Image 1 (tube, rainbow, N blue to C red):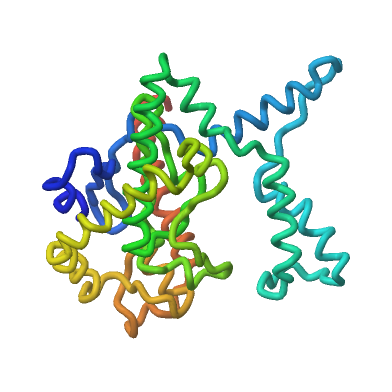
Image 2: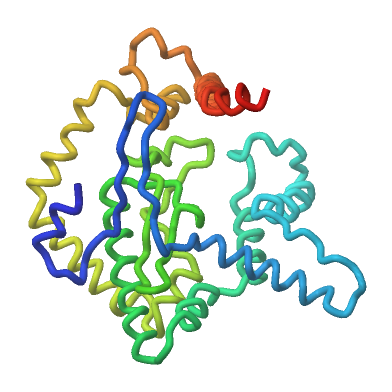
Length: 298
């Protein structure tokens, strides 16, 4: 929907997109995003380099790097036990001070310039690095403002990609939008993602340079094309196939997978049951695809 709005504006501001073709209720085709690398891959490579460096002189295999969730719980669990909290199931009871302390510890242990160094190493000259940094700052501003307008959540590092030939940021997975993240078990309250690694890659001016100017320009463009945007977004208000409310778990399941309107008979179908049905459908399709080969081999 934003392509039509930005098509008449400056070519400097554009949102990288990809095609999605639905083929049925549970299947479809998604265009492959060429040349883009998930930002999480940079973090994983750093973990692997650190693990190899730690055992460089030791005659033993390097340890398996911990997953982000494992890292987080390895620190937050003992910190919560110190506060007398042993039941970790209800995160709403966790003290904010403990979570902030753990977050600050993890930030200190992780380099804040992983993305900035990758942009530098992907450039063949200082001039190319400058152009790439400018492109990164502008595309980050475009996607941040678009995400703010449509209430886009679930912006983990596997859903944020960077094209290291141009510096453009590419976002994927738009399932959690229209402020849907605020209704999750752990509510998402930030308007867009701006962590130290993303900010450092913006250059010496940080968010107060090209990024801020680009954000202002993008908001002006969106305001100029507000009639087009409102017309396109109006379809989501009256669309009976998807429930975008944040009331309950079934609403999330319908928004995630598609389903009936609120109040119909499938309200009792929860997310886990829908996930099971999707998995069974995918398994059935795989069996059907391999059936011919199995018959020939027999």
